[in-house]
Length: 352
Ligand code: NAD
Image 1 (cartoon, rainbow, N blue to C red):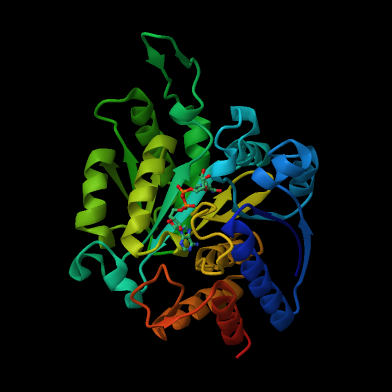
Image 2 (image 1 turned 180 degrees about the horizontal axis):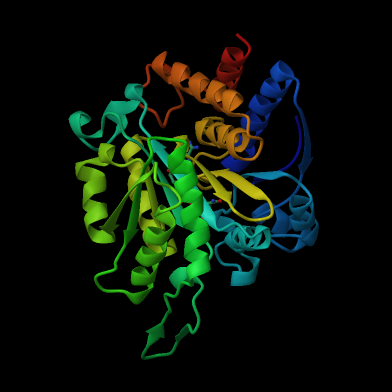
């Protein structure tokens, strides 16, 4: 197959891990005869330095003309004092809005070889394999009115039925391809927006009789994630709850450097590791590239519909960890490698 991919390495370790991820994609392309065409563009702090904008118009235009976008990370302490419209993170929010993505997928999968890296007891966390679908374009982060005065801060959590339905549909489809269980998380005992959420998800369930749907409250879900994480398959929830729950889920699996994400539903899909630009280790050659490489596996699966290739890449990550390889963030791994060495090891498995 052919695909046009815009590559946005961004700042700090974003550059280092994206290089390894693209190299893996190239190895897959070579092995299976796919043609991936790459355009590299600026975003974040480096874009501010070179163009005066964290999301140059040319970057967004290139992204919109491609099949998928692969992002590294943005940000750095040297940009913290810039006005909001120049901050690297504003570029990222602008990119998500410009692409129109509304479903953010964050898998949390614990490799057996990393059980000791989890803060939970092995017996509780072993076998964790869940995926959170977070609504990304609505809820309290975007609802109007919003304001702040000296005496009062106001935000609005609002959802319409179509907004709920489109993200719930993504979640049902994904659950259908996994273990066929969907947990819809809300606060319907208190919030009207959650009552609508529950009603719409329940209605949609009729189209997915093969998927078992359960509803839960966000407070009890927060507890269940650390007491019985293996009971979840796919979780779907609104923006604010998803922001918090997905960070909670991410720490179950060891290192932040391991975790991929995909943002779907818009004109063009966006893939990025969950971590930031990690200024504390940038330039040292020790960043874990596995989150970025696993993001490429998601790109192969969701945008390119290449399930076999996605599985091959995920299997290479699993075998690498099982053999004891890792970067310094994975302290329990006995065979410590640099970013480029770990990337090269994954690629060597892709051609076997
Ligand atoms: P961070 O994710 O960059 O780093 C948190 C900690 O995890 C650091 O100790 C870092 O060394 C470690 N870490 C992260 N990724 C790693 C990897 N791949 N390998 C090894 N260790 C890794 O979060 P932060 O320090 O809070 O933020 C740093 C900058 O990144 C800030 O400017 C922040 O705004 C930005 N940020 C960007 C994104 C994004 O681009 N999506 C996400 C989060 C933070």
